Length: 225
Image 1 (cartoon, rainbow, N blue to C red):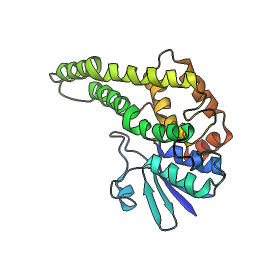
Image 2: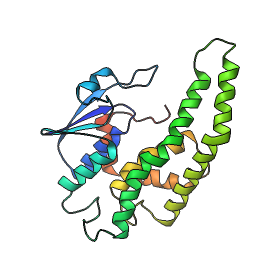
Image 3: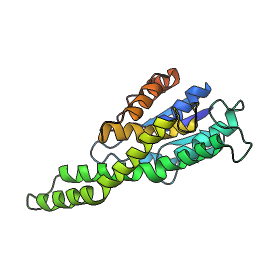
Image 4: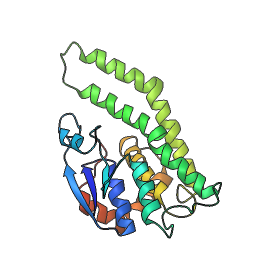
């Protein structure tokens, strides 16, 4: 039995979604974030030293990192390549784009989104009254000079790519779309803006029965933070 160590409002929702697409049986072990810090509970360190989610157990194998888990599940259980590109040829456009977006999601798209969340929380954090103007000034300057422009750069790029292709790896849905769903969800929820292709992408994935079943298994999903 596959076991998913699932943290609420987290990237582990993507793993549940792929398992539902593949129609594989699995068990969900639930964990709740700390309401104040939003951090995972220490119990997760018993499964993986970093105490992060998702973590997947498949027999004696213990895997972490969303993209690594999605690739593992696709290679092991998607023999018909319904959600992943065939292994050959190595330079096939779909295969290269799939690999790119699997890495881009966390390596490039999420850092500015995470920074925007951190600075937003910094402005609202409890602190002595005399420190609030300083903290807000630092947050506003960082957002205006670096985080905001980087966020716009990446969201414009994603919007343009979805304008050229219905799905991230090409013309069919696959694991690249599952991996990119979290940054797109977070971007639309936190940054908004007039980006119809990103919104249409979310409408397409939300309509998938497997996505809806994953929400039923994993619980409500909120990326606003």
